[in-house]
Image (tube, rainbow, N blue to C red):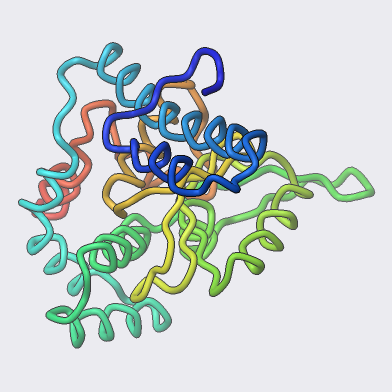
Length: 242
C-alpha cells in the first residue's frame, strides 16, 4: 500500500476486495486506497488535533441527543418566516418517521432562524460610492449547509460559489434535509464523506478551530455560538430561556 499510510481499523474490507478481484488493476487500486486512507486519516487527525488544543471539549453528539427535544420546542416558538415555517411544520408532522440524520439536519438548518443575521459587508460601486450588503436567513443557511438533489447539481453549485471566492468549511447534503442520500464536509476543495449528520457538524466546526479559519460572515451570528467546547446547544437553550 502507499508509503506513509496505514489502514484504519474496520477498513480491512478494502484489502479483501483486492484479494477477491484478481483482475483489479493494481495501480488503480493503490490510487483508490491512497485517496481512501487520506480522507479517513484527515477526519481522525482533526479530532486528535482538536482534542490536543482543547482537552476540556464536550461530547457534541451526547449534548445534541440530550437537548434535541428542547431545541425542537425552541424552534417551534421562534421560527417565524414563511419558508422556514413550512419546513418546521413538515418536520413536526413527520418527526416520528424521520431518521436521526434528518432530524439533526433540519434542526441545525432552522437554528439559523433563531439567530437572525445582523452582519453587514461594506461595498463600493463602480463610482466609488460606499454601500453595504445585509445578509438574510437564507444566506446564513446556504453559507453553512448546502443542499442539492444530485451530485451533479452539487458540483455545479460549488463551481459557481468558487468563482465568487474561496469556499469556507461547510456541510454538503445530497438529496434533501428530510431524505439525505449523502452527507459530506467540504474543506479546501476536498469533500469528506461522513456517516452521520452529527459527525459532519462536529468535524466541520472542529476544522474552523484546528485550522484557525474564519467563520462565514453570512452565518457568523449562529456559527460564533459554537465555541471550542462544543456547548452551543446548551448555550442556545439557556439564552432563549432568558
